[in-house]
Amino acid sequence: MTDGIGSKEDRSLARAARNEVTFRNANQEIERRRADLEVEGATPFICECEEESCNTLVFLNQDEYAGAREKPNWFVLAPGHKFSSGTILSGNDRFVVVDKHGLAKEIAEREAT
Ligand SMILES: [Zn+2]
Image (cartoon, rainbow, N blue to C red; front, side, top):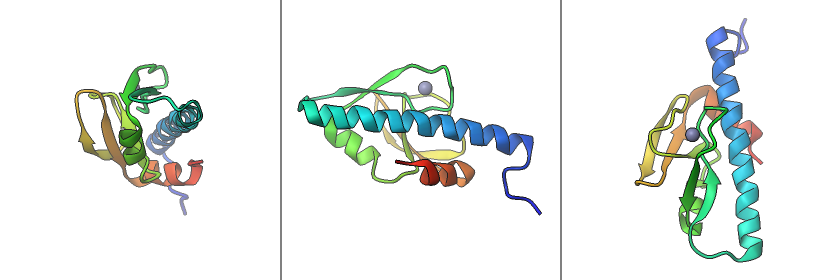
């Protein structure tokens, strides 16, 4: 009997996914403040890739960010950055939106704020 996060590979995938969720939650806070301050135009968000040391900023305007937050398992990354299982939904030269699958999706949906 396995709970699905038993293997070493799955644990490292789970860690990567949690890292992505942490950045995602930080970005939600940035968006709340942006709304409070009524800042117009593109705002810097933190890349939500699986690399813990990544501190790349991605710039999205309000509509782009709202679109990227439509589902709890959608993440905003700098173009070319690594992510655990998923597919790129859309993107441009500033950012890509990734639809996460499998365990990464489960964790994202469970831990989303
Ligand atoms: Zn990154």
